[in-house]
Amino acid sequence: MTQSLPAGFHAGVSPAGGAVQVVVVGAGPYGLSVAAHLRAAGIRVRVFGEVMGSWRHAMATGMFLKSTPEATDLSAPEPGGRLEDFCRERGEPVLTELTPIPCTTFVDYGQWFQQRYAGDIDPSRMERIERREGGFTLRLNGGERLAASAVVVATGLTGLARLPQNLVHIAPDGLGPEAPLSHTSQHRDLSRYAGLRVAVIGGGQSALESAALLHESGARVDVLVRAGRVRWGERPVLDRPPVRRLIVPSSPLGSGWVVKAVSQAPGGVQVLPARARMVLLRRALGPSGGWWLRERVENIVPVHTGRHITAAHVGKDGLRLELSGAGSGPRELVVDHVLAATGYRLDLDAMSFLCPHLRATVKPLAGSRAPRLSAAFESSVPGLFFTGSMAAPSFGPVMRFVAGTAYTARRITARITRYAPTP
Ligand SMILES: Cc1cc2nc3c(=O)[nH]c(=O)nc-3n(C[C@H](O)[C@H](O)[C@H](O)COP(=O)(O)OP(=O)(O)OC[C@H]3O[C@@H](n4cnc5c(N)ncnc54)[C@H](O)[C@@H]3O)c2cc1C
Image 1: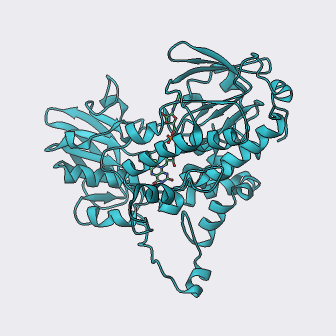
Image 2 (image 1 turned 180 degrees about the vertical axis):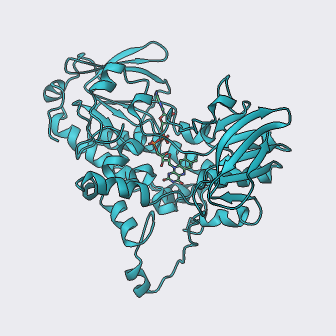
């Protein structure tokens, strides 16, 4: 897909005649990395959103990253911005594959990275983006309006939570920690359920780690996993013999040739036929629990595999859940709360800050509601770029992880600098 960027870029000025050429929406790992590269290339850029906002507000206290330190680097335009550089500067011990990284450390690293490479960030929320002649007009939650020649959407999974539709009726007044049903992204503190009965739905890291945290803070937890088994990561071996490394190569996202290929060559994934890409997206790097979490869950928290909820009723004694599926285990559970760790849906229509007309103009990838992207992450609307999970259907599963930031930031910056000669 080749296309021209908005006309303003050729002249090196924004269509509004103001200072902004590029707006980055979101200040998580992707937004910060893209902003760092754009600034280093001399592009005028403004970044909106709370720095590492998702990691501060949409994850429960006590969580750790599943990825290893080398898969957790944000992308700086020059050496010195890796997680290990941050730890060294702080005088903290060197992290290895055997060191689960606390989310709090990752937040601190993101803030350090922002100050070094990404410059000032405006914490305002982007409320509306519209297309206009030669670019975009944008409105912030405080009412400020601005124009930009290009917009990079880096809002991560915000607003994209997926819920089991057959359960939403149990929370008629809306979802949340105090309602009978919530999504994992709505929690900071799972200790509020101490002494209560909680059913956790899902078999990935988020479900299993939430279950461990709930159990450790005194809740009675049951985990319901639709699949027939739970997959656990393998404890890394630091000094593997060379032959073993050849047969099963390691990569920042795990071991094996497929994982290595998808994590190191997202551009190769992009040119695969659509069906092959979708299979990769579903199968490679699918739901699993981190190796270090296993001892906190297995034989400690009841995990019912091959079980899903077919109906739920609000009764006097709590929420009555009817279960079915090929696995063994209970046919019914009575609980006080259902926590859905059921992931996220990649749906342009859920990105409410893009005005309806703009959403309708962005061409989706066949068979999905994610945007079709060029090799430079640009959508069918010239100057509108998407990063992170929204780019995963195009570039493969690495885009669901921090490890995809370097490829993304370089590609977008190369595209934009081609059209925006620095003064
Ligand atoms: C529980 C959990 C654990 C995870 N663990 C790992 C892990 O171990 N390793 C890994 O690589 N990945 C992990 N991930 C995936 C992780 O989300 C991504 O790798 C990474 O955070 C993606 O970065 P991002 O910048 O795309 O999105 P985010 O980190 O979600 O950042 C998006 C930013 O955009 C801001 N924003 C959203 N909407 C607006 C708006 N309208 N206006 C302004 N700002 C806005 C948000 O506040 C946020 O700061 C995990 C995800 C979850 C949910």
